[in-house]
Length: 112
Image 1: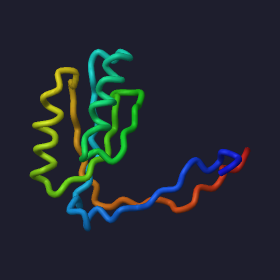
Image 2 (image 1 turned 90 degrees about the vertical axis):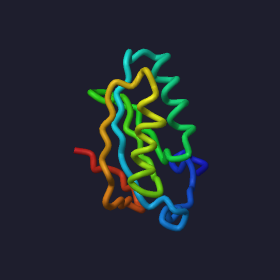
Image 3 (image 1 turned 180 degrees about the vertical axis):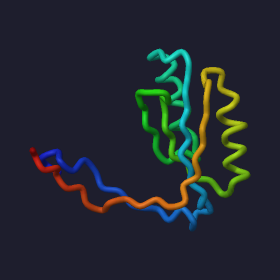
Image 4 (image 1 turned 120 degrees about the vertical axis):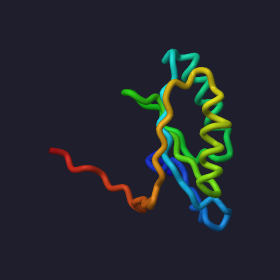
């Protein structure tokens, strides 16, 4: 940690035990893709309790948002009531996550 290689330590929460077993990745496109719009939407989406993580991206989508909710109905409500109301959003695509595995170890890549 002193060298800066490890920047933090976290606990992993069992989402089923807190009644949020349904996870999804939500791809979002905003317009215009200006710094002001990106920063404003980022502040909005990261503050929502359904949001687990946010990726700000290049390409067709500006954001990829990992969410966890109680059920499909709550996911639908999240999309319609939280996202569809935002004027800057031009496209939303949702993919349900069936399984989410994370590597417990990050190894350095071999140099060519």
